[in-house]
Image (cartoon, each protein chain N blue to C red):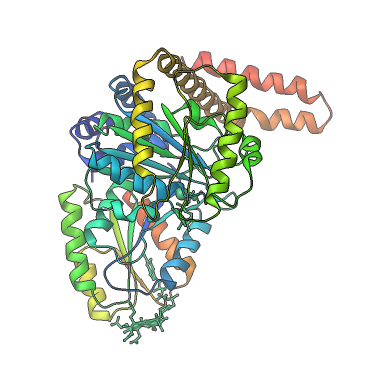
Length: 325
Length: 137
Ligand code: B12
Ligand SMILES: Nc1nc2c(ncn2[C@@H]2O[C@H](COP(=O)(O)OP(=O)(O)OP(=O)(O)O)[C@@H](O)[C@H]2O)c(=O)[nH]1
Ligand SMILES: [Mg+2]
């Protein structure tokens, strides 16, 4: 079969053809040069979708919650895109992408598009092409786009710099509020969810979290937005309505208030830096493949220090830049 | 590996077939060979499986069948792939089935049938070869 140019796929995706949406995301993930101009053109046509980030430690119930949430958002008429990220194995580079299996009740609905992604070594909780996938789904007319991050450990909080609304999921029985503070996820939430509220120990987690937040607020007391703490059970459906209400209210803040404006600028700033970083890393890899071996030999021979030789390697990068302009 | 990254694979179980031991073994084998693997879970319909394969834009859709339903499942799968404009997807099968059915589903377009006692390396090399033969897309 012949190779269909990416801009033709983009037109098909804009008409809602799911195969084209899927293929474009694959090309974005592969980073093929041909797709990059198309992605640039796509980006300029986006911005309408409400991007919702969902994060929380591994096993806290993110995927199950995303499924329940997507169903409810469908009922109010939104088309829902989902990008679900799981870690790649550090040993083989492969992965078993397990989020989708928790969302199988969504399988039959053409108004829901689920895409699984492996981190492929990217840090921060998302994959390199996650935000490009979000753009493509935005182009295809999905109104709400949910990003499920990998189960975060510490410092993996980039999602707050990528979404209009960030939801942090905490499960009962995984330690007290200190855990959330250590993970750095207490501050990034626009909405806190305590999952698995069908369990008896959930109340304790709710109380803990509310208390931690109250302490924080005394210090920060600004905002047009009070961060709610919502208990949800994806099993019984309890709390999902309250969550959807909170999301809808926050969408209004994100799209219409001055604070929302500031947030959008911060999102653009993050996107710009991250993309530049990836570009640099890519080019550096190309330059180092050629330039590093002779310098490494000199380093091994104690001919010069690592800092001196590293500067030479970086100089190669700049030379490469001017050659390829 | 393709030049553009790990091979993406959807492993699917269709219908009432509850045998999932083999498919789970295969999932781990392929992950350990560096592929991205999505497992559908049990009891999916052909519609659900094909929709997932198209959204995920996998290189290979692999269906595991130990229930004897291959002659009804694959025509449906190919019809649906056609409707989505996803005719370039590589479809393979595994599990348990008689020789005449293997020939029949190959005639329908199933590119490889890897039944019980297939060594893991054979599964990996077969999938890599099929994806390499297909080329960029
Ligand atoms: C274990 C087993 C069970 C277990 C299943 C446990 C489980 N969770 O998986 C239990 C006891 C539950 C069971 C139940 C039944 N079973 Co049973 N079962 C078997 C048995 C003995 C072994 C299957 C197995 O696990 N093999 C080990 C794995 C590793 O091998 P595998 O699945 O073949 O997978 C390998 C390859 O096929 C390949 N592969 C598999 N999938 C894929 C996919 C892709 C994409 C690729 C590339 C490769 C690939 O790679 C794997 C590794 O090499 C087989 C007999 C046999 N010889 O196969 C019967 C067998 C499959 N069962 C059979 C039957 C009839 C049943 C029942 C209907 C019995 C009954 N009357 O109740 C029920 C149905 C249950 C249901 N809902 O489906 C028949 C099926 C006949 C048919 N197809 O026409 C068989 C063949 C026995 C027989 N000779 O009659 N069964
Ligand atoms: N009791 C109860 N269990 C739940 C609920 N939601 C999810 N679980 C269970 O929690 C476990 C993890 O659920 P997932 O949705 O996969 O969690 P996750 O955060 O997406 O996991 P990772 O993606 O691996 O980080 C599963 O065993 C679920 O069945 C709930 O509302 N109540
Ligand atoms: Mg998950």
